[in-house]
Length: 137
Ligand code: CDP
Ligand code: MG
Image 1 (cartoon, rainbow, N blue to C red):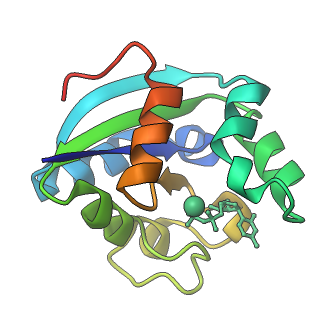
Image 2: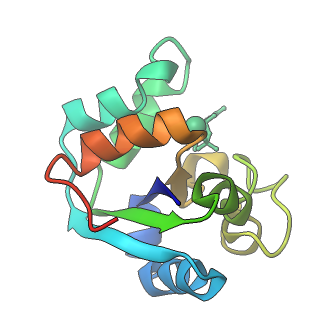
């Protein structure tokens, strides 16, 4: 069993896609073990995207993530990190396969609807950041 972090970004919340995205995760057989609607603090998002600090899009992705409410989810199941990454699709929705969240519901890289942890180490760090109180995993 493995637990991973999913964020539904402000565009996904604004477009009323919380249910659609959570439903896909649950129908796959993965378990929601943490869930909250929050307006993230700038420093939390900066820590979350610390690996991208030197990239040209860092400022804009951080501003975007703090621009409105987001949903943070902990998702548990066998190989959940890899399963969720595959379900969310490629970073640029134009390259994302139909059937994925980004491939079905998004068109632009700036508003690609979701974040998911890239590997188990990132998942552990991101879960500690977004769910310091712990999860039900
Ligand atoms: O989210 P994912 O792990 O697929 O992609 P990433 O390479 O870790 O980039 C993090 C986020 O930064 C992306 O999801 C995009 O929202 C944003 N980004 C961007 O706006 N422009 C880029 N050229 C690359 C990433
Ligand atoms: Mg990433």
